[in-house]
Image (cartoon, rainbow, N blue to C red; front, side, top):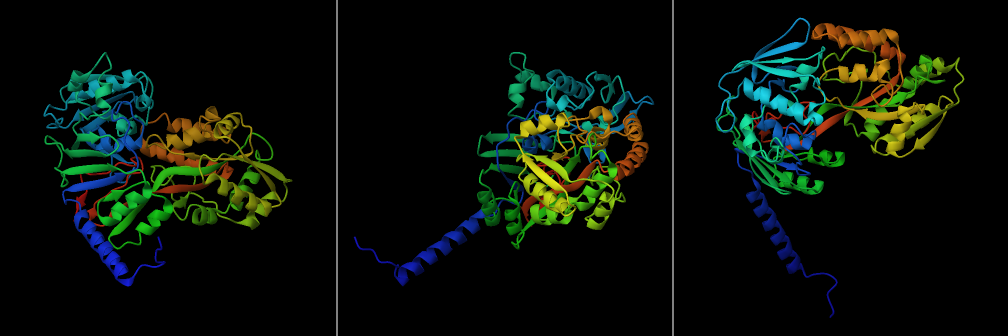
Length: 517
């Protein structure tokens, strides 16, 4: 059959008209209901049990379905009471007593009381999964009266209060035990259902397709404006973006950086960008020459091309760190000394040191690590230092890091709870050398004393003072090169109002206070 090489003009016109009509029809049908938030996620949750899951993807569903004694304040790592109206801490820091708000109810209408708190924490510690890890292993919970509950522990745990705001601190309806099977403490049932007192509750889940959360009719807090959140599972990032643009979705997460840039160009869309607490930094091995000399480490810190890394590798979606405690975490010092690229200073510091060769150990676990290694290699070459790059398997890299078998290496770090202990004690305490946290094998008795004292106190002002004293010392000692904090990015339609990003609650949406206008 002979076919024409080009279609006739009338056929082109008809095809164009048809495409236009289809597009208009799709756009007309796409608007989501004003009382419903529609979220596009890349993957299904795996387990919704707060005592089991450590996955933020699961927390999208579980976090708004439960209340906790404590919650984070809006976009900060500061805390306030949620179920707790007030609390006291004993002088020795070993006993925490919480007074509960009255009138709080689970979604079946039963009261949230001290017995429910005791049940939830005893179940958490009994199951002994990831969410229980930060809590003292000897934690004991006692009911003082129906609205008063007391926690006791064997030694001071100053970050205990912050752990209560995480998903693992969720208060679960004790009636969930009606669903227990073969002594599993209702694990199987809670993996796919919710039994909380949060503003919303899970009402349906079609695996791989859709989850629906609806208002908890017995919620004891301020009634949300939204009546429902629908979560659509859409594996392809491009499909999530297109459905956002067409109006089928209100919010989309997990897009590549370049696609977020395209979204930002659309007049009816916006991208919420916020610094997260996920940081990337270089380890400089303090335990062996030549990096055991702080001047050599300082020289490297002045040679790194921070702006180039952030602008070109991270496409601007990161912010240079200012010392070890990430911005957004209390005890961060906004006035701390920040290294910048200054090759003259770097050369002056190296003038009396004969440093000719160094090695840079990395893996491809993070796609940004290799270009950062190449950038560092090029910068140090200007100082006359030849840097040998070693790209190895991540498991092997971790083994070598733990044995101090490296000179320069790279890593990411994100805190498990909102306390600078996660940065200062893990990174600098001599007792935590290796993968435990102090991956530069740094040791300074004065710093040890400061961070250990800070970890033995419950007064936040005193702890902040001690941690900031320690920060000044460690920044000058340059045990690490503080590269950047990554931005969290979420794409959303402009009709979505009141979205708040909390750096401790990635992939969790404040649907109790979001509105659509």
